[in-house]
Image 1 (tube, rainbow, N blue to C red):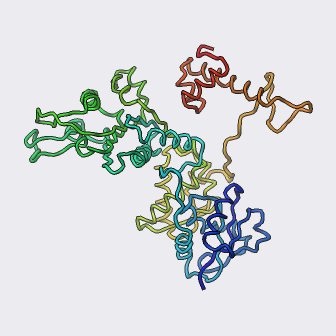
Image 2 (cartoon, one colour):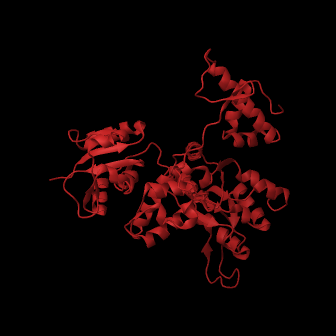
Image 3 (cartoon, rainbow, N blue to C red):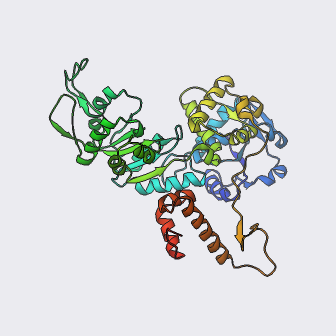
Length: 440
């Protein structure tokens, strides 16, 4: 008897339509889709290690079968209840469910986890610039995923069939960096026993990713600027000019304008690189993405042959409450450690290291800012008896925030836009709409 999906439950009613369309294609007669509130009436069962669990057990045993769904369709908070036959193991059930559902294509395959507003804004900008032959400068803290963003740009560009060549400008000794970038001829220096192409040549027809460009020595900054401007270079030990058709994407965790003021970074190189800036948010600014990141990292670890594990909802909530100074890299390291300690197990909050355990609270997205009218705070759900003009309230609120941001940014529009989480052009449009100038 073939396995069939008896029930799928999701806490977000907006996602139900996606489930229904997919399930109708699998078996329109056997499928039912409902909201999580109906779980008690659904008499649902969850397959786990060959046993069926009652609904009341779901709080302690996580929705493990959701892992296959998340891998295929990037959905969350779902419970998949499997009817006969009972699999010998949970892992077999996961695999069968994933193969039944198949892959669900997205409109833009950027390959990034982007549930949070900050990441959605980033992927929107990324999609706009991907197919343009302009230089991109990616800013963001260490471990936030800047190289993944660069790879996504390359993958969505017309150069996707060409090579993606990364180089960490801060990890290579300065005496070898020029050779790594531009190549060298035989005998150019001690140990150069043969000619060798550099990263510029290797990236011909594709993308060259200059990671940690802020760590590049000043003397090399001059040479990289010339190569970008003139699209030509010379190998170490040669006077022959070579050319390469490459797109430059650079990244840094440093404050380059401050480095320019300190004389540590060339201003002309900064403006050459900063044609289209992108900001990768820290993990602490995108905690909505943590459940999907956990699933994605666990899937990658499983693909690498390291086994699998699952996190209970209480463990995921505890991770969302953590500050994540090391960003996504710290999260990946933690999950790899947990996989080694608890292979093929369910990890609860009590199993996490003390530093990640935190208070036993459920993380919530940041609350929306109160609407202020006539200087007094009014909660958005408190409606005066006489009613309000919502349009006027929203306009008043926007103008106040824009004025605050401009003052905080010393009236520099681009910096004010960053404080407001807007694109510079969007802020300019709003300022024109309200007749505002940068010196308000």
